[in-house]
Length: 214
Image 1 (tube, helix red, strand yellow):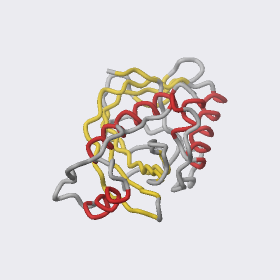
Image 2 (cartoon, helix red, strand yellow):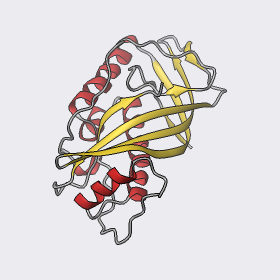
Image 3 (cartoon, one colour):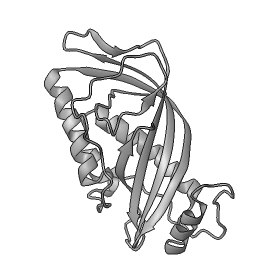
């Protein structure tokens, strides 16, 4: 169980919750994240890289809705593996939400595209300005599935549905709860898009867009 402080205050960042907590306010109404092009990592110690290996056999599920596009990515990058990519997504999700919760801009910067970073940083500033505290426990990641993928020139884009279980509460400067319930586990769904230049020697993927499911 990973403990962190977290609240997503952006329409494009806030996942769909199926618990009973009151959703946080949205100070950036109408502002969504991405998509944008991938950026080179600034610090290899603060990125989530997929294993560097050659895929001898395709691990793309036969029933994958993005099967053809994932094969295009494998043709462009012989080391691309769906299973390894999804393992990296799980690790990146935990790192990103934990860093966001802690207000750790230095760690977030190389993981996010410029636009997504601006949205995350703006939410951090808003939170800090209000003196609020976000208490959240990431109980676990239930699902991480590829929804779609495509190649745009040399750049690969992969969109993933991530379903997690979380316990969260937001407290004001006086310590009083303003949203959430520390006694309830909520199921949260996020849809994130990652990108990488397949010709780059940098193995890292960048979060370029976030959205909540309809």
